[in-house]
Length: 111
Image (cartoon, rainbow, N blue to C red; front, side, top):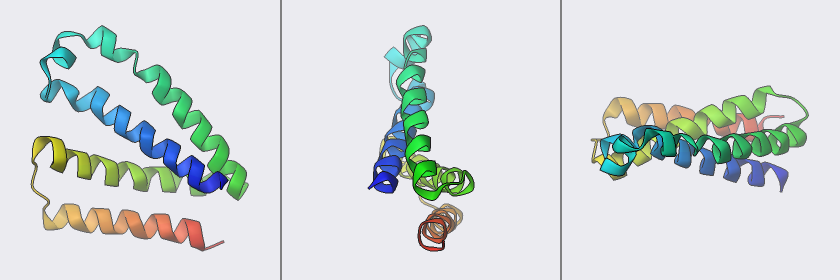
């Protein structure tokens, strides 16, 4: 349960982080109010700390959490760019997503 909870938290943190950093390209409010948007960093930081605590607590080491987080980050970034900005899913992007999934699966199932 710790692993799934940690992965859910890191996914949520990645979504909020994407919106914080890329939102200025989509919404005028984000572009005109960077000081307000900056405060999204507080919940992002908390979510990342809690996800790290849960994933590292599950595995007992830090490497798996880092690699799982990186994989989730690539997947979230790719899907949100496609969904919000209508960026095309190229073969290169699809390969990167596939590799990220493989990295996640290796770290979850290979103990």
